[in-house]
Image (cartoon, rainbow, N blue to C red; front, top):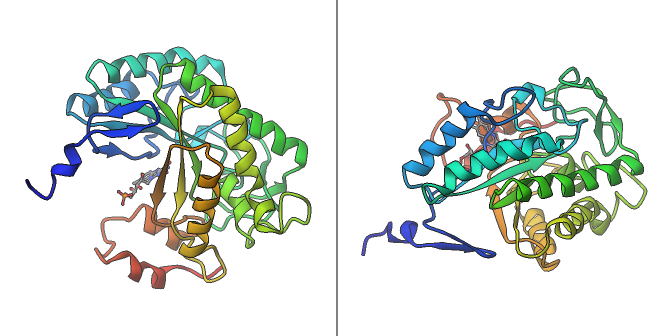
Length: 293
Ligand SMILES: Cc1cc2nc3c(=O)[nH]c(=O)nc-3n(C[C@H](O)[C@H](O)[C@H](O)COP(=O)(O)O)c2cc1C
């Protein structure tokens, strides 16, 4: 028995049995072409991983559910339209043929984007505060828009299911729109979407409810979340554990995928996407590198 044997044990997620624990986590491939459709090049990129024996790929890092979360800059998969379904079917077939499973990460990025991409929409955030990395101006999101985007998450999840994918990973990570609501440093609202812990969690809760209503209990649905915002006035690891426990207690999710840091400043971005000069230090030392905004 070697110390790596566990990697080759099957992993159960909802009704799925993943053949091993080798997983490709969501990353923006910048490969979806033709208005956000995952065509041949995209599929081949994942099929090679399946051929190599991987258990699960979470594709489509940060794939938008709504027209006002610009897809253009990252060439991510456009999950806001039914046009994507046949392409997802091709992708699912290519993976399943080799015994691998495939899910997609879906999101609304809120203020975390450029202002001039794709359909040129107005970016939105809980309280209209700009993100230091992209620096785009954004408006304060209105309740009607919140409810429309909650519906968009449900529709996108249904598209993933109809396209034969094995599940979705909801991005509540990297200070995208859902976790922008979590953080009091970004969410200054005084209505039912801000203030108390439960109010700040409400957007994510409603997304989960809508998603489950759209796809039922047997489709694998998980959350990717940040382990620590790494800001002195941000959500720390204890806060994130409390948030994870809260969503877990609702009984609607099958897995959590935790990513080390948020990325709404340049220094925290370097925690998530380190460049080749980044020192190979333990995570505990990264906190010192984080910027104060
Ligand atoms: C270029 C690049 C793009 C990424 N895009 C995403 C993304 O869209 N969504 C996401 O959840 N993580 C994204 N990640 C983070 C990776 O999934 C992964 O967590 C990170 O590279 C650290 O690896 P580790 O979690 O195994 O330590 C990205 C990483 C890289 C290098």
